[in-house]
Image (cartoon, rainbow, N blue to C red; front, side, top):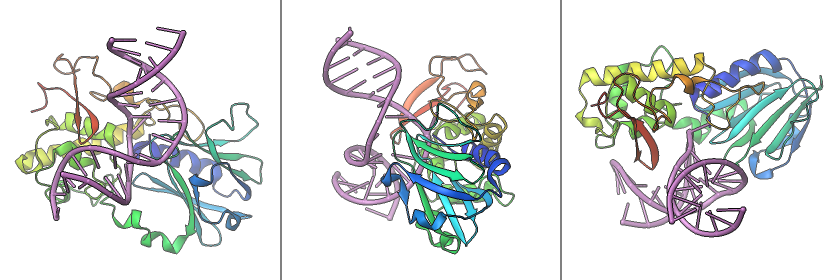
Length: 272
DNA sequence: CACTTGACCTGTCCGC
DNA sequence: TGCGGACAGGTCAAGT
């Protein structure tokens, strides 16, 4: 499910709701989904909620951090009052807070995980070590993007954007959208791009992600924000999931192909 | 090496 | 309606 904008949307929601709450108890329905010692969490207070790439972090008192990776179908839903819909058959982990509100980690496909670690160990996590730059931070530039992309000169550009060491947080939806905004054929090899195309791609990545956040993320099937509401970015998407529609710019039919094993959408007239 | 494919899971949708 | 196969927001590991 979630790429950078979706995780960011959840982060913004949780920041409003759970900072300051105390963890009363913890329930693990799917041991595979949880890494670490859950007993450590008892009585800890939520200090902060943050995001790096597609990972959400919750800092707790006692120098502990909870990390969440939602992978394809994970959801993180905060519920303030009793609700009949929750938990459901996909609820893997439940955090009970002392004010009786709850945080549900649901994950149909069980690819996602929750992990408790010492906060100081975060930089040593292999997952974080490998990550490329955060695309929405000020120090990210088209030159950095170009340099990182050129480490994979013969890879199709859209596949290279998905590489989390090149730029972190971009997934399949926003990679397709970024190529459209840059008007570049996703199949084009990295080493065939000119500077003006790297610049356009940089803008395309930043703009598609920013737009994703603005519309509360993409809800193809699973994604909901922290209070269970869907995001509506896909209504404004140009190509992702639009294989039965026409290009909003030129009217040509949107193509769907497979690149690097992933569904890839583009306009064969606008993107060259 | 660099790049591709399969595996991890569960569920849905599409074609025959 | 039933059944098999392809496919789904991600990332690793193994294979070529």
